Length: 564
Image 1 (cartoon, rainbow, N blue to C red):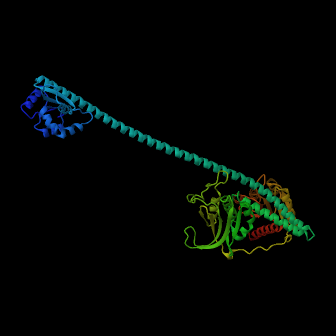
Image 2: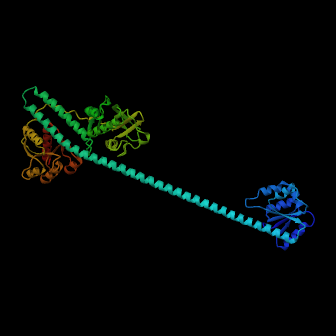
């Protein structure tokens, strides 16, 4: 249909003649009966229209043809061949504008021969073919453009997807780098802590030895001095030595890695004994207040580990109050019967509260994680709260933490309350003096510090024991090869071998020999692995404690020998 020629000549034989001429040129023609027929055929498709001038005048009165021409696609310039009546002179402007409103117009004046009409029709059809070619080219360009846009869209999507993948991989890489740096920093801090712990252990051992020598020589001075005014001076000096020993033991809690040594502990008494250390640790800018309960708050736990936990919490509170503030330590007893994390029963509460900056809500779930800290690198290891949590759980209790930004933080430790009937009676305070005279049992003292060794030997000799001494483990084992003492008093930290190793080797040589391990600092796990659970005598001790420990171990050994 697009290559046919429409013929519209409603008057006379013009339509038949035109159709005949076109048929001779093998051009398909379609004669239109009226205007409606012509417009309908135009919508179906055609190559050109041949019409008479008088038919055109009637056709232009109908706006439908004009609208059809205006609605042509960009590639279309529809050709018209108009058969006009020959006139003398120039056509009127109105008629001229009417003819040229068709756009692509070929005007043929009648009468005309068949060749001229055929040539005009062929030219119109060829022009329309070129328009169809342009249409096809434009359509191909459109399809190509759409395909290109699709490919560009796919490429952009692939680039966007790849960019996201690369960004995600980069984020993961940066996260891994940050985690590795954080882990490395944490490892560095732990290694520093271990180094400080080893250094502190050595210093504490030497310092305890000095305090031990001071303490026992003060007792000897009190025994030897005849003037009454000397005794108050000795008592004051001994009190200062005990205070120094307590401070040393509390500071050691930062570096110790040892098995718990639980015993019946009065929480209020423990807090009363560490007031000085707490106030020194938090500084003068923090006000420390105590709200201790009146009832007996006792629990079976390791007092040294509890001191460490309270001290860790106090230091954390101090860091949360850089401009100063208030630290409140509270004790009490509570009964729980519907708690998910606690069996029903009575519990001892130890609470540490501060008026600091508080902890953000999104970090509350992480505060007990090992190595987690909000402090700058070098200001904390992130182990403090995790140690508190582990100690409380190992002691059968729990730790709870509440915090609000700008209002402070409260950490509560809950421990099972001990049966009041289980509390042993307080040991009577003994006056300075010698224990009752002992029998002539033989005791070997193994101690690397000559001053400590000398004062222990002198005190045991005053009590009435036969005493020999060795400066290290090698000398002690050499003596054991020639004679068997009734008891070994062995220091733990010595240069050639530890006290636990000496005890182990001595038992290999002599069998079950009574032993006292005298120490101010010992790795209890190593002691128990090598020497079982020997009697521990904590330095610094006094003459009465030494005499009681020796007498108790010897009496126990005799009882076992008798029953065997």
